[in-house]
Image 1 (cartoon, rainbow, N blue to C red):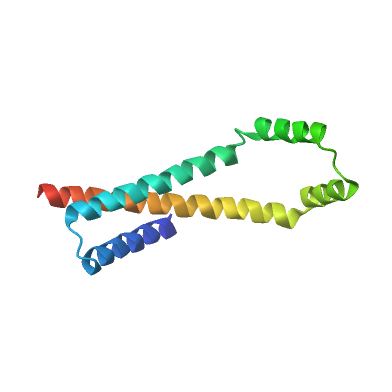
Image 2 (image 1 turned 135 degrees about the vertical axis):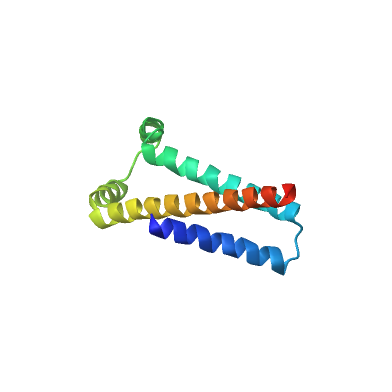
Length: 124
């Protein structure tokens, strides 16, 4: 949790740096931060849906359909078996999903915080 807060604060500081460096108006900065946050939140939701296994039935049926139309070679069967049994690869995939989720959520939250700060500065 502490790492997320530090990351969010660093990203907000980065937004403030870009705001000063490019001489953006507050409204432009608010719009850019909101759109960037919306984009990263969309990526987060897509990754979370894929990780939850929502499309597993679809992917499995498409793989079976492909196997019905196109015959697999013995080498392809061996490679698929090796990949499914590779524990390091499975751990890498889990780690990559975990980090991708953390990064996209952190960027989304910091962007939304920055856009809210911009809105409060516009009102004040």
